[in-house]
Image (cartoon, helix red, strand yellow):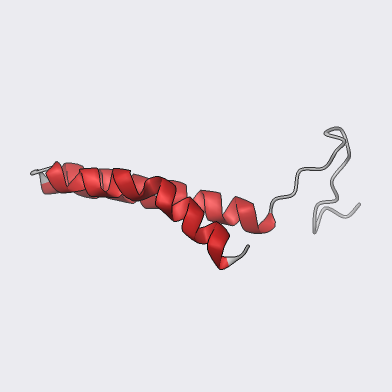
Length: 67
């Protein structure tokens, strides 16, 4: 993932982050803030390591499975 790709993902969430400033209740703010960053983190992780194979039926070798 390049820096430009990361910034593009973060920019998609910027409006949501700014909307949090309108929340007066800290509990709701924290809950939505955590959700926002968890979703962004998932997108970054998937962009870094996930490559969907062309054949969805292809078997995957699991580590420590003994096979």
